[in-house]
Each structure stands twice: as C-alpha cells, then as structure tokens.
Image (cartoon, rainbow over all chains, first blue to last red; front, side, top):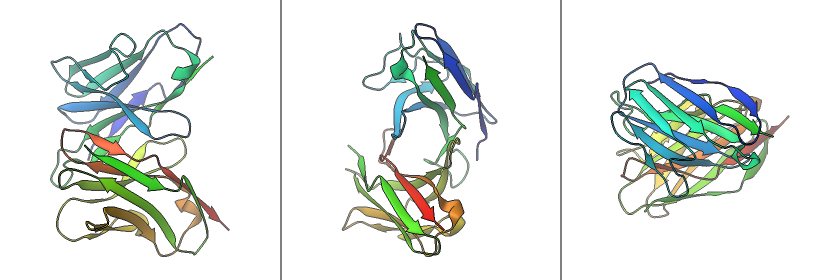
Length: 117
Length: 112
C-alpha cells in the first residue's frame, strides 16, 4: 500500500490568485495522478505526472492553468492558477499500487478542499 | 474506450437492510473493476476489486461484488447495512492506458 499526504488540507482563496498543492508519498512511484472532484460529482483526471518528464494533461485541462511539478519519485505539486469560483473543488492526489496484488489499485490522498471567493 | 455507469445517485436503506449499489461498465478489453468508498472529508479507499479468477469478490466491511460479464455489471452488495456504511461509493474500471475511469458515484444513506 501507499500512504499519501497532501498540503494544505483546505484553503479559501481570492479569485485571480494561485494555490500550490503538495502531495507526498511514502514510497517511490513512477506515476502520480491529480484529480478534481467538483461538489457532488465524481473524479475527473486532470493529469498524470511522471518523474523526469512533462505531465500528460487530459482533455479540457492545460498546463498554463494547472502546472505540475514532479521533482522526484515521492513528491509532486499541482498549482491552480488565476483562480475563479469555478475552480472550487476537492483536488486529490493518487498513485497506483506497486506491491504484489495492488497493481492497478489506486491509493488516494485525503484531498485539498479549495474554495475560491 | 472504457466507461462506467452507476444507477442511482442516491440510495437510502434502513439499518439492517440489504445494500445494493448498481454498476455497469463498458470496456473493449477484459476489465479490472473496482469499488471505492469515500467517507465525508476523506479521500477514496478501496473496498474491493476484480481482476481475474473468481467472479464473486469480497471486500472490507462485509461488502462483496459479483462480476457478470454477460451483463457487463459489477454490483456491490452488503447483506445488512450499518450506520457507518453511510458514504459515497464509486465504481471504477481499468481497461489499459494507465487510466482508471470512475463512475459518477452513489451516495448511500442509512436510516436508523
């Protein structure tokens, strides 16, 4: 299994500002995933972050709005830039299992609850 | 391409009653199927998963699900609901491409 922590756990921000969310994993992983969960909705994959390469963004998400860093195998950041109220969501970091029997299983951080005023 | 449909955004049961949460999937390759649970203000955690082999899989907290290929279904059940089961439940499918596709979620309410 993997234990994932995120910072901050929640924040209230003003429109037009940016927030960087940190994700720390207790083991080395190849891929890290960032999801958005809008109020009352399911998870939408924003991007996949591989160490040493540019993140791969899903349709509807762009690097200028959601820049991602992946400096090593246990850490990643997601920045929500130039925020608007529509960015109010829970942002979740996730990794795939690598241990025996956990392949394709995903482990999630507790999430960052963002409110944009 | 893969997709997941969860029937019913909200399900309400009485404590002690059967829990049935429905999930149908679409996949062009043999899928791996998952149920995740999300308690309030928490991230998701795995309840159970089907990869290969036995089609009836048992998970944590007394939940189980049956993979029915002919019906493309993976419904989640629990014989007797407990108040602590109240949460959001997500069905998910992995069909390759390093991506897991999640359903829209079903919120389970348990009445005393």
